[in-house]
Image (cartoon, rainbow, N blue to C red):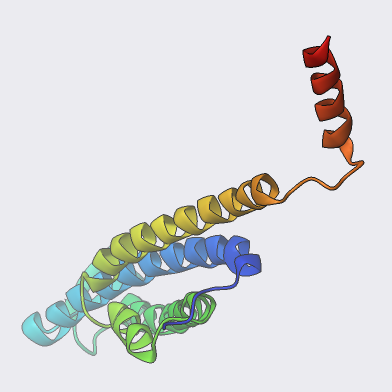
Length: 170
């Protein structure tokens, strides 16, 4: 039987899901920028320069960048956001008590182009459905328990039932 999240963790899971979704979209966009930059650099021999003599933003030949090298900046920013993405993945994975293989699949979303967007939608839908189901089960459980429990003699229901039988006898 697979482990399920604790009922007390359900609110934390919603926060972890939101954090994962934001980190997933940012990491996915940065990964697409990185892939575009790699194609420009290794396919066409160009790097992205910010504020150089060619203009505010320009592609210049490799090793001729004299201003801010945005190609390197995109590489570093994606790397750091991937660390944040892995942390959000770990947090959601541990709260949901999924198997380790699930962690690895979600982690691949930060290195396989477009996978983070697909996983973000799929994981988000799956976790929200699970949380809604668990919360509705938790809400139904106390109602069923109180309906199934017999009333104690002399309890609040005893006065009502006694009054009803007195009225019925009259």
